[in-house]
Length: 303
Image 1 (spheres, rainbow, N blue to C red):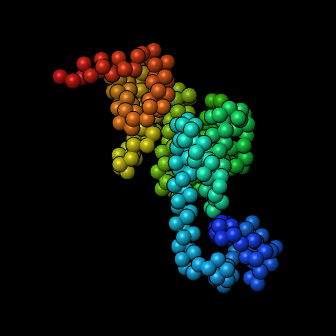
Image 2: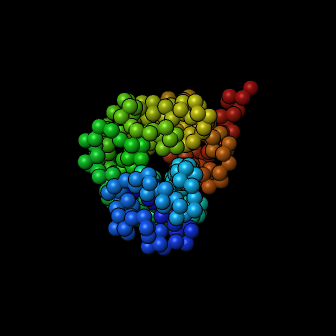
Image 3: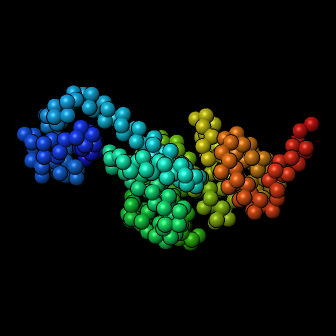
């Protein structure tokens, strides 16, 4: 199905009708079977399709793999700006991706879920509708009985934590905790953006459950992974959630340290919209002026 999606993309780009493309190779009905995933494309048919497109089959397959990775990278970027509520950039990515045929089935789910969150951020979907559509994408709650999960399935599952109340979150939180303890039951979790996003959502949900030691543990996992990969993705969330957890535990030394590190990460990236967003969160949550807090912290710790 993925390969036939790619052939369809190239066919469209070559300005060939479907009828002309399949003529002399297979029937139009058989071509639709390839596209729906009912059966695989035999290699000799792939060669014939390649000839129709004027591209050698080996080059076509190499470009197919390359295009899949490019699309995944683009959707990673789209998902990231959606999560950070950068609506202008999110609109730009969505417009660009709309014009493309998403090749890989799993990546289609990833893209569809990004659009659900995007619509929710723009108040085009209610919390209930966003939860319902996201659940349908992965066949929740039936999915909880699976033994193995893909990283996209786990990502969508973790997003339900955002939409459900504390009591409804519990079975998801328990299943996700089991998966991350085992690790081996999550397939293709090497995507560090997805993995880190799931950890961020877990830490937020543990906070809603008032399980503050778990918040700190999961945030530290995210930070340690980032150090290992030399990537600081979502560290502002991890330090912010750690600060909240330490504050609730009345550990004010670690609270101040975490909040100061959150400030550093935000200003190292220099994203003005994100700085404004987090400043608003922090000043409301801790009843402080964030800028003055940092100045006072420096006075205490810089000799």
